[in-house]
Picture (cartoon, one colour):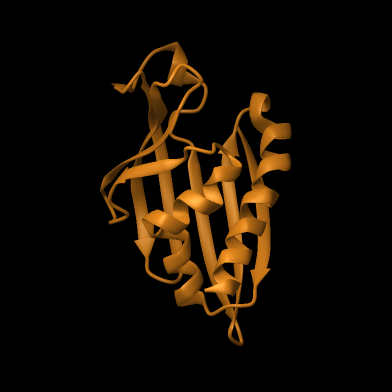
Length: 150
């Protein structure tokens, strides 16, 4: 596992960026950089199970199974991934999840006199390094744009 780091400064207050990142409709907009059908099911509450979903080319629901390891409003969110959704079914062990189970996706929000510094730390395996380096900056740029507009 390799830890990847991304960050962006957003011309909007922390509480607004935090809300924009996590609310259902705006979440779907900024994560469309990863998958145009990106969505989530579940809660952002600490300890809650959450599914990060999308529809694959065959029209089937797939995605990640995770737990919200921490949620400190307007400061920090930590997501611990531990499984996948395959054709809508939860898979939490076996070869499909061994390479990255337990990986973390952490978001840190810092107030910069009314602006927000958002830092993202995400664990990944070698297979996704180039994809993340290409896609995370695009996703964060979309989040910046929708946070600054609304």
